[in-house]
Length: 363
Image (cartoon, rainbow, N blue to C red; front, side, top):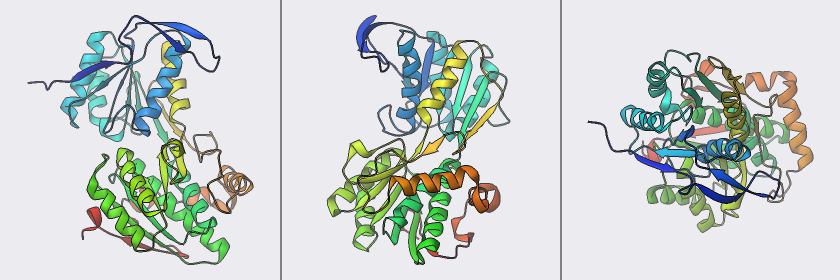
């Protein structure tokens, strides 16, 4: 039996006054059920990939004066994801956005079941490949992670931490890039840097993660990059409680806490906006895979640099150009899943030592 799925529309009335785009003018939104986002692990306000993706769809919907919608599956499973997709289609969905690696099987089924629906799969490619009604959007997270690791070390941090939500491709790429960026900065500064590295096996907040992160900070780690969705909130709390800093992920999380040093960002909002717009306006690039990095402005750190002690906008612009131009093969030499699989312990670095530990610090 299909599990109950909560169907949530972002607006509950037919006409609502909202601010539209950046114009500052009020406009009426008409209730519409042609655009849906199905949330992955996490919530629509997770300050991470669900929210970033939703904001892209929301921006386009507001521009044309209609309501966007989303559905939160009851659980993390292929069956629950397909139930949510079915509900969206039954409600009238023409475009469905699904953010997250865990949708790869559900979209493989749904794209065949609903050939008239346009699917936008973020952070993954459907199992078996994308059909003509599916666009996959990938990001070069290793480049965003590289910028975060580089900035942290250039700012004076020599004991770093990485907490990934799970060993899924996007998180692995963030982690590999973080290590490579730290190594590159350590070489420039002629320093030795230590990095403690783990996967939490959850993308949700958890008191145990707060405890673990606090323990890391007490051990002398001064910054933790949390590539972990909502679980990053737990790392954020630990940083606040111990007067340390952390690095956010996917979107600019600096507004959530003064403890956020910077964020390793992906242009989720912009890329989903362009994909939804293309789907609705008749020029959908179905069957394609976008792979967005520094060259395409698909990754970045936030514009504000006031929380750094010494890392400056000029430093950032210089290293970003190194990635864009692939100076000395730096961008192309960042470890990837293809080159090293999913085991960071087999990667050799010259200027950092990596301590890999098990789930939540357990061997």
